[in-house]
Length: 229
Image (cartoon, rainbow, N blue to C red; front, side, top):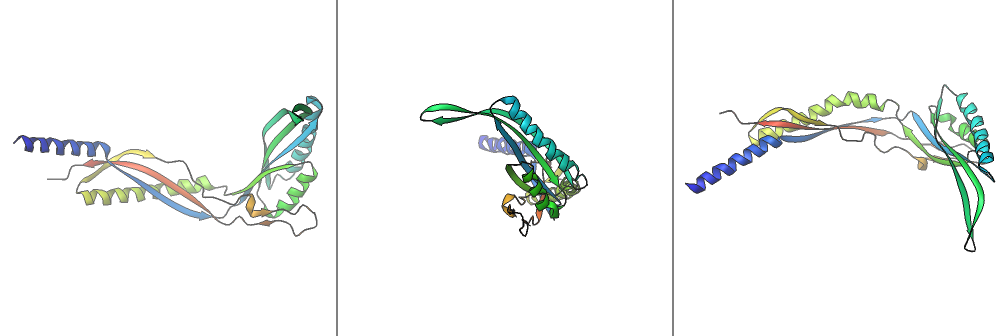
């Protein structure tokens, strides 16, 4: 009798635990899109003997670059990411030698016309751009697509939960938890997909952004209902 009572308590505890935890499922949907924008990150740097001259040199380059890019307003957007001024040193024979002060400015350009890439890059280099951090292809309406896919992902999760509940012989209650894990874009083309011929009279770059996959994922926990008697 005692063993039966213990078994009954264990079963009740297990059922209570299951009901408290519920059924947690993931719903994932994806959609392929063609990138429509290029994000180009680059920097300009000036090295001089004093901070002021270095800063003014970089500012002069930046003004010319911004004036050029702002003239492409229909196909281009530009933003300054950060400005940095630092002392540049070098070790020679165990002794630290100051070479001067380096002023840097880093910018990001959103280019909407891929065919303009060779022209834009050539001009930026002429204007003093030295450090090209990378080129990334993106789809400008990715968030809108994810919003459209959200309901579909929730329905996928709900169908999974219904299948699990049916297999367990229990009822499916209301949703108790909803999470959208971080993520979204599938891996897109980076600088490896772009070749730039700096020689000038070349055939230009080969831009191969390919397709990207936008993914929408949700996690939902549903309550468990005791089966109807």
